[in-house]
Image (tube, rainbow, N blue to C red; front, side, top):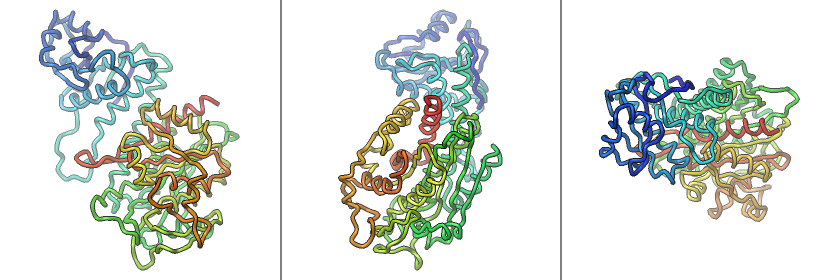
Length: 492
């Protein structure tokens, strides 16, 4: 689907469908009023069939005096309550209706609605991302498709073109592609999306955008001394991969931001075996690595003025005769020792070696992204990702970017008081701290490997995928990471 910016009048726009908004109590937006006047009251006459609630839709065909073949009315809710969430819901509802039509092109007269204090560039980004999200589907493994591909090929956003809006459009299209890649990788089953597959996808990105790439093999990890990561992959027949993808969009002297993504392509829990129910969803445990690859791809596609290094440690966590056992002690790349009390707390074991490895790049900032703890789901549900940071200015930057991207986070404590829960009688630390504050103690574990860095940790266990009828990857937090990196580069 292609998006463009063009100034249009709704009544004269020649398109397969134009989309206009209607608030509750029959209050028409400016575009809807123009269509109503041109059609001599046809829109108001149809309002008895539209509630005006956010996301409600009504399709009108062949209105007199209107150039478009179809007019789609979309409910916006109460005018006084119209804000970011309602805007995104309205665009998604419009996209859902457009998917069912035969229209090849559409003009979205929702994009120019005023959304609080947000600038027009915000509208452009979120209109594109919401449309792309609604049109995404994963059916490449089905032999019989449920429905043909949607006919809609182009969407016009009715603004007067300017450089800021064009830049926002470029950013949104690249971000949508990056998020789609992350969703695809997450949705693929673990028998296809192996550590080797992730490495090959990273190589494809590197070839397409002429990026630097290194893929460390097991022997390389052994030589380096990545004892924590190797302990996780010991029982798997799939070889581990340690992926390093480098994008340089500005001066070499600019220190990079390193993104570290957890890449457990399937997590059985190891010897500390998970319950069978919903274990299929553990294919999503590589969502952090998928987000890193999607973010680097998005930045490269838009030629962003940033230097970013994506690090993705990838392996499986399987039971077996070679598997790590509760009570084993391993030596990490940092030299610190860890007593493994629970083999299902494996994400932090691969991340701690990756975070130590990241030091060699002399990064300005390190951000890790991981589906790390079920405790974060209990704390925050499926709305916000958990944010932890050892630098408050960095935390504030990420939180502001998350609000801008509407890919929201909630900051959690990272106090030294919690470190006592990781005490071990036999090693420098244990890999779990018990049930209380599980997401916090997991972050505190990682903090022991980032004391030399400005570091933030995103726990995306509750936001990386959906369960139930809508089961599938969300592609989060690619929009947040892209926004953070662009805002950070612009603010320096």
